[in-house]
Structure formats: structure tokens, C-alpha cells
Image (cartoon, rainbow over all chains, first blue to last red; front, side, top):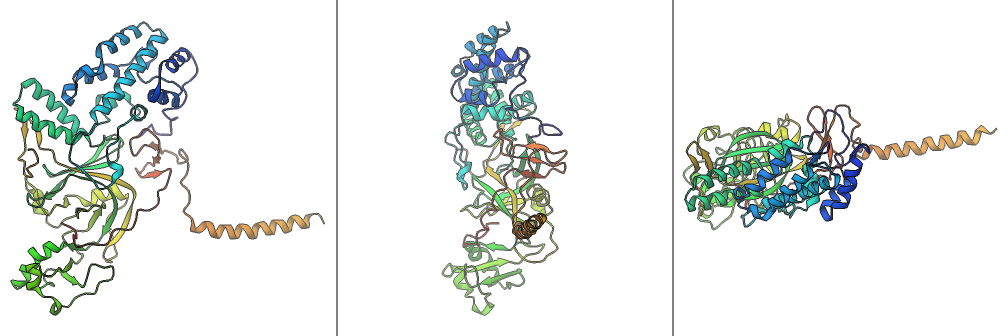
Length: 420
Length: 83
């Protein structure tokens, strides 16, 4: 997150010891406890919500969220709004102790609200990288993240701790509650809301792929850095709900054909008269690191087609390769990759459920530049050039069917049958 | 006569530093400390509120801690790439 054009002092630096700051800091020190005290101690007991001896405008934004917590599928009554409002009213007199009480109460309520909103519930998501599994955020972490951005007001207004997809569905939930939509539609909306709870906010560098709309977004430094269309899994070969960390870009890649596709897709073509060379493929002896290239005469195609013999096939690199110019790897047991694609026409279709589960990118070059800080173009024709990402980037594959229309809540077709 | 031992120790130091320099060539240079690059801005890449590096004016991220490279790409399996 940018602090300015040059390095500003850290957000947790001790405040200037002058004016009314000293009694207020001292009062906050007395008032705060536990996780909240750790947050304030690290910033020299500088307030977050009080500025120049007054309650800041972000307070009203927080109270707005708490009073409409039903949109988060939470209860406003859990946050003791009346007590909070009374403390704020008393703080308007400017007494340092009253200000400190309001300050600490606001931080405590905010941290609790963020923790509740981000609580993952029973959302089915496979975490290929265990470090991405949602953790119960302590108050210190919630407040520290909120205090880091240069503009706390914008952070609060945009709900900067949540994904923009959550923020959109939260607004939709508010509208649905006001309009009194049928209970089955509400249940479906809650499912969607829960899927977006576990997505990071825009201050975390990450990628989101929605397998319902066939769209990808990437984020960092508090904003969306880009978006593009993607082709995702067909109903019979779905893109899973999966989170992992992108680690490698493979330039000039092979396409390593899954054995079931060798059986069901390639073998029938060869038996119908196509040659492996015409498919720009080669067969290999095994799945070890040093396989031997098989001669056509060594392959028992009827056995491959019937499933009696497994065969390792790979498509040769080049413009027509199914992986295109680059594939991005994140270790997972599902064989899922993000990759370039030569089949551009599929990206122009409104419904883009055509792949075997992988994510085919509309603009692999742009995503590659964002991930690698360099072009994906390479002069070398060497196959499978592995380039490590400078920093691993989390990717979340999700499924969001709820949309806002002029007429209110609507849903895209549930092509994967996950909405119950 | 007093400068002789000084010269000898200087020569020794020069020889040692030459050896040291050779070793340093193999090691990756440490990243410059935050603020060392003019025009750079602080970065909090994982959104936890702690500065973890900086962005230079070209938008490139420079971590304060350079992580070790990831494990090599996994070898293909029968699962292949679903595509």
C-alpha cells in the first residue's frame, strides 16, 4: 500500500508528543486491554478514530455497517450499538477520558465486526496451500491492517478488508431484504455471500477467478489491477473451488495430456486415421523424469482407447499448443492451471464453460507482466522454460451466480449445480 | 621502519578482502533498506498492515526479505494438465 511519494514514517510510529495528544494517549493506554492494547501500544497510543480531539467521520461509516449487519447475515444486536452511540455522544465534550473510551470501544467493535464478517462458515473450498486457510483474525491484526492505508476514510467506505465481490453481494443482500425476496432466493444469495467472505480484500495481492461468469480479476495495493475473460470448466469437467499460490510461469510449454483424455479424446482420433504428428503430439514411454520417445509402431492404440493401457502424451510447444505461450503453475492435486490459449473464439462467447477444468486466459501477456514484472515473450525455443514468480501470488477459484439487475436480485444459470 | 608492519598488514588485508570478494560474488546482494531508493513507496503486499518491501517508480515490488525460490515445478503426472 502506498504511503506517499517517499517513505512516510510507519503508521505505528509514536505520535508527536504535543498538545492534547499526551492526555489522550495516556487515557487510551489506561482504557485499552488485550489485543486492542497491543495495537495501540505499537503506535504510541495514537488514536485511530479520534482526530484533533474529535470523533472522525469514519465512526459514522462503522455505525452504518453495524446497524445493517443483517446484510452480512449477522445480527446488529451483537454489537451493542446503543452503548457505542452513548460513548460517542459523551466523547463530543472533548474530555480525554471520554474520547479514549469511545476510541477503544470503536476499535473493539470494529475488530469484532471484521472478524465476524470474515468468518468462513461452511463454504466448501479446497486449500491447496494450507497457509491460505482462513484464520480467526485477532483485533491487533484487524486494526493494524486498517491503520496502514494512507486514507482510513476510503478504507472504511470501501470496506477495504473485504473483496469487492463481497461488497457487491452485501449491497444486493440489502436490496433483497428490503424487497422481501422469496426464501429460496435468499438462501441462494447467502450461499453466494459466504463464497465471497473468504476472498481477500484488495490490499492483498491476489487473483480471483469466477467459474460462473468466466471472469478473472487481480488485485493489489488497495485496488483492482486488472480483469479479463476466461474460459472455465464445462459442466462435466468443472473448475473446482480451489485456493493455491502461483509459483511458476512455464514459457513455451508442453501440454501434458491427462491419461483419461489420451484414452477418450486422442486415441479415438488416431484410430480414426489421424497421426500423432498431425496432432503435434508425441508419445513417451513413462511418467518418470527421463522418458523415452515412443515410435508409433510401439503403441497399442486399441488398448489405449479401451483403457487397458495408459499412455503418456504431450502436445509440442508452439502457437497452436493448448497451453498457448505460457502456463502458470500453482501446486494442486486437481491438475488445474491458468494458461494462455490459442482458441480465441471461445473467449468471445457469453457462456465460457468449455475447458477441462483449467482456466484459459484472455490476456496471458498482461497477467504475466503483473505476476513476473517482465514480458512472457521469449526468444528461446527451448520447451518448458520455468520462470519463478518474484513473489508467490494467491489465486482463488470461486463460483458466484448472484447478480444485480435493474429488477433486483437475479442469478446466472447454476451450470455446476452448486447452488443447491 | 615502523611503516613496514603496517604495509604488511595492509597487504594481508588486501589479500583477504580479495578472497572475501570472490565469495561475495556468488551471494545475492541484500535488498536496499526501505527508503534507500528515491521515489520508492512502501509496500504491504499481504495486507497485514506491516511494511514488507517497497515499490519502485516502475511499479516493481522489492521485498525487504527475499524469499527462497519455490520448490521446482512438479514433474507431470498421469493427471496431466486438464486444459
